[in-house]
Length: 300
Image (cartoon, rainbow, N blue to C red; front, side, top):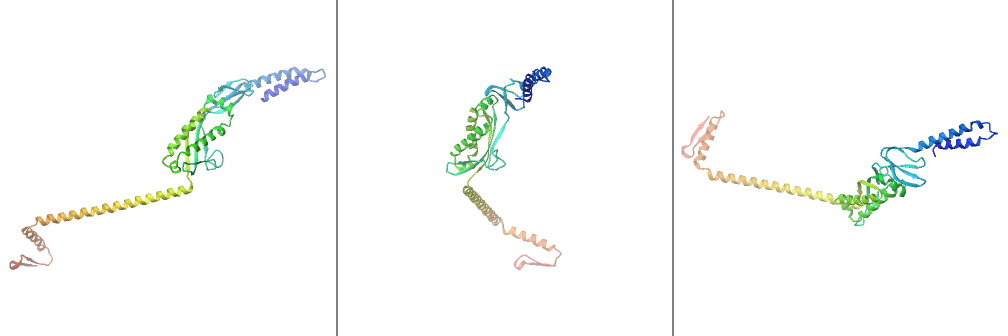
């Protein structure tokens, strides 16, 4: 009950109390009564006009009976006796995380699930959802205002645990992660729709494997990297060996071509050209041209 309604009712009762011959304020009883009715009217008017904030809908309850008609954002005229509860229809998020300041629960709220191979994996998850405006009355009637703790959290955790049992731990962490997230979305979306909620997006933030599995994966990755490195070295050595074979084959081909094309006259001509260039040099030298008895000696 609002303050104006309380004051108006109190004033009306007081007007009847003082309306006695022995009361010194008997003459004011009528004024007090009128003032009481005015306060009651103002109080009723203030209760009859309701403002709903943007992104909210109002759910009306009259003596515990929830009405199906919701109030949109803005001003609405309602029965002064109804109680109006606002529901947020904007996108909301609920995060379940092992990091204390990241999850909505305030402490370690990450989802621990058993994989197909019997290993325990820890999953951090964020659920983005919103209320269907027309379903707000049924949510208020069946769940009250704690729908997040009664619907969002338990459904998400249950579905994830159920689906994680169909995958091996390493697959969840790597190759099957997107498929796992997609199947979770489908399962939770169906449950949410039946309860008046819309699942907008589901984000698997992190999947943590047991320490022993993480070490095994790291060892495997290191071994694969070493194998790839060795393969690269072998390929490089093979390429270098092939380069040397090609180079040697080219030199052999060149020598074979030269040996098959040179003649004695061509060699003699090349010798004369070389000796000519030597004779033109300003340095002291001795040049012997020809061979045998026909040698010519040139000195400088």
